[in-house]
Amino acid sequence: MLYIYTPPLSSGCVGGTMRMKVINLALQHDIKVYESPITAGHLLSCEEIILTNAIQGVRWVRSYKSKRFFHNIADRLIDALNAFKLLMKTHHVERFKACATSAMREATNSLAVINEIYSKTGLKIDVISGKDEASLIADTFFANHFNFDHTYLFIDIGGGSTELSIIFNGVIIASKSFKIGTIRFLNDLVKKKTLNEYKKWIKINTKEFYNIIIIGSGGNINKLLKESKKAINQSISYSFIEKFYKKISKLSYEERITKLGFNPDRSDVIVPATKLLIKSMQYAKSNEVIVPRIGLADGIIRKLNNVDSFGDDLNNLNT
Image 1 (tube, rainbow, N blue to C red):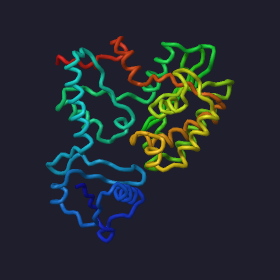
Image 2: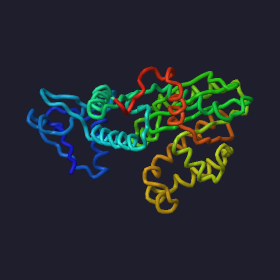
Image 3: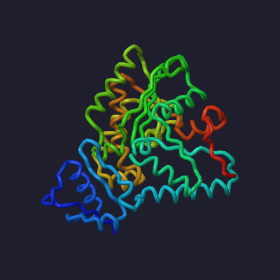
Image 4: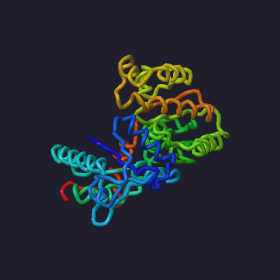
């Protein structure tokens, strides 16, 4: 059983908004929360320590006195990577690339987690920048089968970030990563200022072009393609996406699973993802989306064929 302990306000603890968000989120997930004075003994015996702040959000404490903390998520990540390592060995994989994106980019303890992963798995994690993430996916699109006569707005909607690229004559002329993602929306962590910057960036970078086609990437947009019953690379109209959003937004999380057959890990995030896609189409004045079902993994695999482009950080199972 998981418990959260927080100092009572009477002890001098500040009743901040982020503290309340953590408490409310815990209660929503049936995690018991207790207000109790915290002693040094408690800190040395607990499994994790977090600090909350309205500006910096949730900060993970790496160590206290002689004790180091590695939270359950890091432990599960290490277990998963060891499992993948065994699978790759079974299938005689010789070269691979282990990459991390938005969550690891922003985690205050990312270096500690990366070092811990390496010490326990022997795997080197490459944290990809938002710009490189967008380029890896967009370049892969155009290495395959797109008409250079069109102007495209590439959108990859993830859990922690959304990558945008403008492609003109087959060349990326503008690219940016935003801290806007489905998990952030669900946890009310997307700032209004960031949304305004997102809107402004799309409008400024598309105003000189007409008939822009959006290229959509990510699990939620792939799901949208499936629901539209269109083939890969066939365009999905704005009207269909808008109707689809109205349909799913009226249903509860459970109803989207039972009535529409959505997977539990898709049923919640697909709503904010579809809404963000609709807004993006409006900002770019686009009426269609093409979903080639190519993502970051495809870009990484393509780059594996060119070792120089990835530097000297390729993993080798023989090490």
